[in-house]
Length: 278
Length: 315
Ligand SMILES: Cc1ncc(C[n+]2csc(CCOP(=O)(O)OP(=O)(O)O)c2C)c(N)n1
Ligand SMILES: [Mg+2]
Image (cartoon, rainbow over all chains, first blue to last red; front, side, top):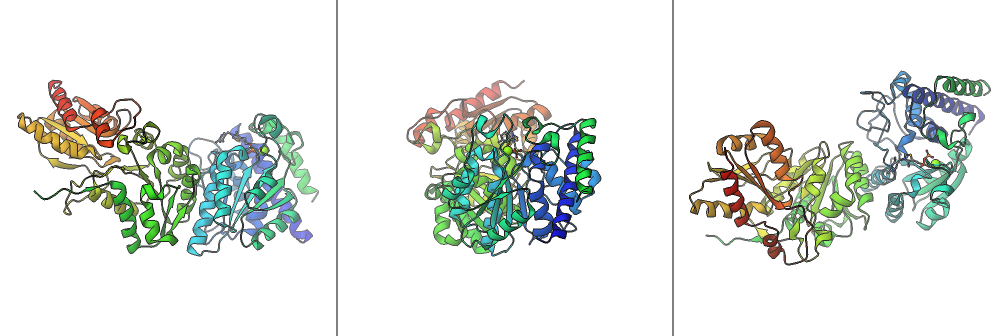
């Protein structure tokens, strides 16, 4: 990836991160930690990779993405808004009654959201269903999903893993956001699903391990996934929960809490500094 | 009288899927290692390229079906009622129901008439579960004729449909002139003293009850309620007003099924006695299906008894 483009993507991703802070601050709730850990992945996909059109979000041949870890909705909303699917002002209505932007992704009402999600474990299956449809009808769009590491404790994730490999859904690429935290603590303190790479390998997937905040590595992994002709690809993305907002980084209590006004101002100032430094 | 044929509604389901494939090929059928039993196996044999076995993973299957449907295509997903509605309830609610996706769930082996497999497989809660999902259409056909039409009608409807089929071969009560319509109850017999609203294999029992009641000088109206959601409010209110007493009959728990749906309408719009024939808040058991229908009080004589109670309870 050329340096200029990388700087642009970093900027878009930091702009989206600002929306995560604004949204969860206005809502006084939501999930900033796991949103900040997968923002670069979403930014790369929506700005550089996926065949999508913000003016025509439902176009039939679009690439699709399922945010299986649906609680990271603020990241998806932030990226979609910055990408132009809807006005960024909507983010301030996050989680409010009758707002378009529900607490978890709502396919029926939000332009650019390909699948409703929020109940962990289901999104990866839905993504496999989309990939199956593409294969069945000879459509050449690709399907992406993002699952959490904690989410990978759900049995359905492995039902889906078995299914996608057995049906040879090489048009499916799943990112596992390996930030080592869930709600009640670290993976290890709760019920660790690790090692994820070995598990996906054992389920017959093409597996790639990357730094999930590094655009070069994200791009290379997605390209490698596209070259795989007979297996779905799992990209195990090592990430930091709360990435780029220092006081949120690696803090389990920032999984599901909105920053207050003071905290939000501090977070936004830091993100602005990061943008200025690009 | 012409000889009555016995056909399981699951067989009609498999055959109707094949018939549908003659008309359109923009759909697929999913199953969870029960194709031989749900009769999607019949479809698989005729159209192997349109069939996908998801293995014994019903939760994944329901969410896969949702994703598939989200691409603008039609999909049928089949398993036993216990696993389709029970095991995968939350997937049906969140993956299929919430985004209102075009998934047709073909749930077979519903109710007590599963027979020898016993309680773990006798799902008498599926209608109750599915009824709580906003936007879900629920169809419980009475015989093979109606099952065939229900499958074809469901394919034309945009949105999730739960179709409930049985394992047991049951008499074909409707002729070729019968016309099924989603959301419409059908008056099979006119009557003035009491109305029996039946669904599924209980429709045949209700028809027998009609004769038994007539022999005692009681005029019963018989209604087939194949669509349980959205329920046909008009035909229920009319029956309440005109006959003043209602009996419901279903091969399902008395909690949350047809009886509850009817009572909800009656209590709101025209309160009259409603007495339920159904599985009385108890688990099933092993045994020949036809014996079990008697043991669990799902016979014409049980409808007759409840009809008399309902009439006696009239103000
Ligand atoms: C089926 C289900 N169970 C529980 C929850 C509640 N929940 C929301 S987020 C979460 C932890 C998720 O951890 P992880 O997948 O690691 O997400 P991340 O760290 O990326 O935020 C839980 C348990 C849920 N949404 N769905
Ligand atoms: Mg995590």
